[in-house]
Image 1 (spheres, rainbow, N blue to C red):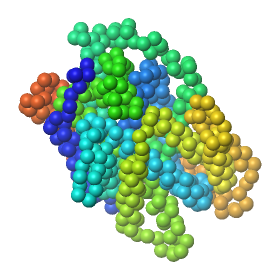
Image 2 (image 1 turned 90 degrees about the vertical axis):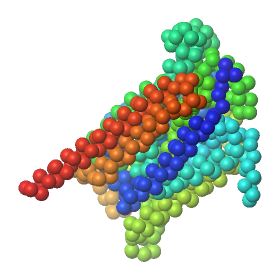
Image 3 (image 1 turned 135 degrees about the vertical axis):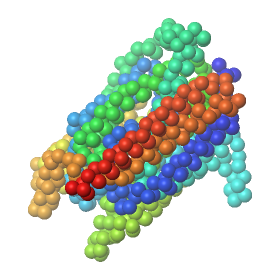
Length: 600
């Protein structure tokens, strides 16, 4: 089917350009949502739960899933289901424990937790440890994204002479993508992140639900959708439809699950979403929504990628220029099966997923620098606290500087072989040791203020020893995860045999423990105009995407399967209209309620 792979045409470029301009415009428009620094970093604690939930889900659904994870699925078959739906279990733990704990912590920035639960020194320590890995991770994310984007757009082998400097197609893609990301994240803050995440979720949903039936219909060679399933069942390589890789490497899958439990409950972006909603009840609703999506939506791209194993058995001939051609399996399906227009939407979906992950990290790292470092350091020299506007300006500058550094890192990254394995290793170096005290500190408050520093230091040193001193013979990822979690956790609990000598420190930790035991009710953060207006913004964006897709049926280049554009566009248009109707209804109800109170 190699000869059937389409090249992007003007419709696809038009859709991608429209999407990038829309993201930029959203960020600029949403500046009006940010009156205070709390609005910028936590949405004022009034973001609707379903918007925060979709944003949380999409934030963990980057190009890694469409590129690196697709390659893993292509090679290992059904074992990918066990791996890439494991977030289902992570979010259920959040439902029972961590969603309410994060909300009850009553935070305005993620690392404020460290100051309340441990000490200011712990916050500084984590900040030093977190910023460099965060920038490296951001750069890696942009790099993975733009490897795909530049290939899909046909820019890989091109050179651009910009008078001042000559850039390759890949380099130019990274710079343009990074600048768009900077504009809307710097302008709109968390409101821009979560609202564009909802739009990105809609795009991802359109693409995955469209490509699922088409892939199996193609595999059935005209005999129908179900015949494609029968073909996969009968012709798949031996062990492909069993959990062969899971039984072969059980410790690897267990380590991955441990990382999921940690990452989806203790990562800073998760905490930021949980405390950005109105109440702990809303936070638990978020967990249920994310759990359901984390099980269902991955199946919609895992199954087609498995079909690609039979449709494209020699991916190295399709993408000879890539280090691991199997990582292009999902995009190959898209370029083969989808009509022009939706191909542009697919490129936008990959952009959307990764930019969501990157902008989320940018926002919370900037909040750390402003709320947990700058303000507290300034207080040591002057009693006067910076004004809200000063903090807001600094927050935007921090986002811009961090994003710029991430673009530089992306430009410096050389060709990576096996992006999936590299990304897992990168995560295992830092996260298990650093996030274990966060996860434990939210449920156990009997350890002293220095326990997190001791636990993290021990974990990182032992993980480093595992990588430098010992030869783990292909089990490095598992060793990093288990050593990091167990050593960090053990030191954390051993430290409980010591008490803080400072009475004020003990009282502060006791007060935080009381907060964790006190329900966070909706009355603490009442509904406001931004929360209501978010429905209108989402509705307009969804309706706009839907209208563009429906109009593509009038363009001759898209007529070969024009009905797909129309069906997908009609669905998005209906969702958009529903959101706008809901906004008008809520606005009308609020007006009547206000009038009634005034008359009373």
